[in-house]
Length: 466
Ligand code: ADP
Ligand code: MG
Ligand code: ZN
Image 1 (cartoon, rainbow, N blue to C red):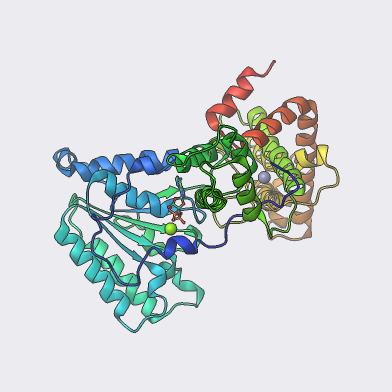
Image 2 (image 1 turned 120 degrees about the horizontal axis):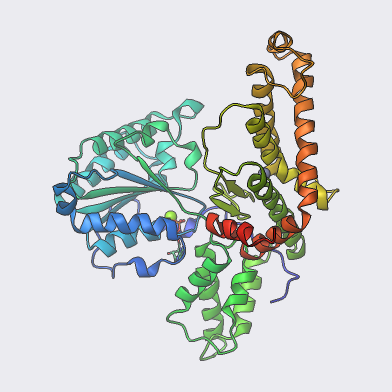
């Protein structure tokens, strides 16, 4: 496909999905051919958890006999169009139990008391059904944090009704309550307390391999010309969600039908791709360049982490935008209790600064990326802990007494923190320069795959010529 095209950012809102929900609770819709797990591609980690829930729903007695307690509520969170609603329906279909749903957005402008009444009605019907899945879509619309001043009495009443219905369940009653949101960060903490939505499942944007799986799934029943190269389409559709991939394929099928074709040609898919990315303001070339910087940044963290924190396991390395739709990326290292010794803290600071240091090593001109500014503030926080609270400094010239004097955050303290950060930045820059080959190789691999599991990162380092 042509590369002179703007790249699509994640869709702002999954309107199409929420339209599936009628404003009033429907009867459990077993009649419509139920979806199953075979209708879901990608999202492997989330699907594994859902498979366990499906087994529970299908055989609750097996679990009750062993005294196993399952999560009462499960929150699915992630960008729009990643298949949260789809997975909730598929869970019910897979387990062969009824599906009841409500969407939070339907409650937003409602008469007093109506939202709460609907929640109670829904749970009432669900309880009578026995084993079932209850799904609350767009739960952020009713479950927003209340401390931001934007609270409304009606929303509170609806939320309280939901919480009390959930608390009223018998354990092991064979009911699973799922909720979905694009914004897990804005939820009222009351929702995620034990006995409520105490399990959280992240659903992310698909990486390149997952996009291929999703494209294949949605082409399952569509005649494709032999020449069609779905792998290449998967490579070109960076940052597309499952929903955007599905609609791309559908659009191509419509184009093929309209021109009287019998199979979907490469040209139909290409036209659909062009239409999907039209109107985006950033040309693909620029977007790729940006991704290359992001890949280098993340590889910098990983290389430094591998070298300096051998006890830490990297869980995932990714250049895909994270929840919230912002073009972001993440490196996850499991939080491990670090002994607060000088070397350990300094290593952690260096790992935090390594993203920015890697960027500057190869692109001296780049502006500070959003990810880097988050890293810097975390590093600064650690540096002040190190300097002010623990009385640990690289320079023996500064006594503990001097430190406690500047612990109030005076200018002396600020200068100390600054120096610590600068030393760490220097040190990690040297380290990365020494390992520039490794850094570039890892960045290239990350750019290609878009996300790497911890195991893949480990294998990369293990295979690296010593
Ligand atoms: P969300 O609820 O996360 O906004 P949806 O479940 O509404 O996303 O997704 C809309 C449609 O996009 C689905 O019905 C399906 O056709 C397609 N889709 C999204 N994610 C996937 C996926 N992981 N596998 C297969 N199809 C998907
Ligand atoms: Mg949805
Ligand atoms: Zn970073």
